[in-house]
Image (tube, rainbow over all chains, first blue to last red; front, side, top):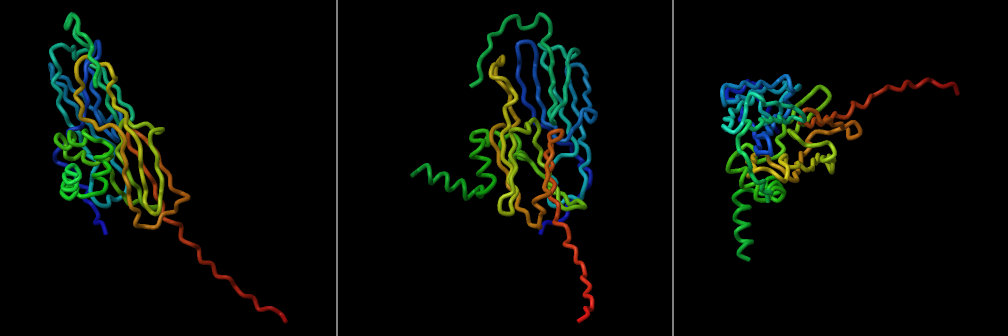
Length: 117
Length: 151
């Protein structure tokens, strides 16, 4: 029989998983934040450092077995020189945060796109 | 022959079950994920909760569409199968730095308590799939009064 889990607050926030790539005109970042709504996300920009903090809504009911879903997320992204963090925008849907950080004007004059295998 | 021997040793070391299904589904990505994030060995991560009406299983499925999920109850086991599509487009400038698992997945949850199959429901919201597993309603015991009949 499984024992009841503990509901204590985690001390260490979880580092969420992210995918990153460059599009023709921006740096694209996708971050997994299951259970997180738009209002639960906090993005703080300090120079080139983008801090992401998020807290999903509490789940109802008594936990049985292990707690596997993080209660707090935190991750710091260092944005490359070629991007303009001031023009960054974010969109939250389906538990995924979509960050778009446009390429700075006049940077990277021409790059040839390479297909990913 | 040689290949099989290697696989057998690996199976003994890692244990069979969900882990193997995961490995089959994700192939090389499995190795990659294990190296970078040990907590992501299982995709999707899930939690079991006891609620007033029965049990509730919550699966973390960020970025997975409803149409890409199948949920069945088979012989006392709740089976979730589906696919998560990669987020990055085919054409990018340079390589994609990937951490999030993609591809087909399968999770099976053995139901130890009786469940009212007819009332099982699920909803997908904010990247969480919540499956409600209500316990069967108590069969009402009703006393039937026996009237004394006239003969």
